[in-house]
Length: 119
Length: 119
Image (cartoon, rainbow over the protein chains, first blue to last red):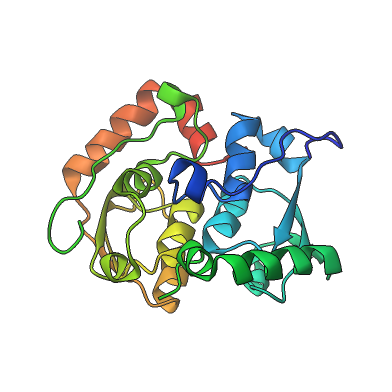
């Protein structure tokens, strides 16, 4: 969301494009295009899951001030680090997001492990 | 470099592809494709400049153990954080890398500011 309006909405593209960098958050930012610093400062990133190190770092790079996270029980990224760097995090603990992740992991455990860089 | 062999070598694509995520490091990882955890653990990332928050976070996600940095005077990313998370950093303080960055910033100051997310 930029300035209260939906700017882009995307999914992970690891399988569809063989991409190792297009997590949903990254794809959203890429599709949103080259925004001004002011636009980034007026944006909120909404995620199903707690952002990983890559997506967290990207939010820091562009100084996105707020991230609304569906749930962080399935996976938790560097949330405390993001807070120390000044990003506001809202964790919704949403049952639908959790169910969505449970379903994905049950169906594709290897893909899940690959996507979060797990050995 | 993966297992001592050059796997990919890329440049920033902000202008060429209008990309906000394809810093050289990101582009390298994307071009290298879906590697195994073992391959990432045997890789070294070589950068002209100290990696920004995004590229640093991506190295953390994929557990790249070592980054060789050309120089960190023009810009310094979260190097101490990377070290606390276990990544080995080697800063070469290379005069050629520094001259390359000086030239770029003198020619395109706005582009440089946009690329590092500066207001």
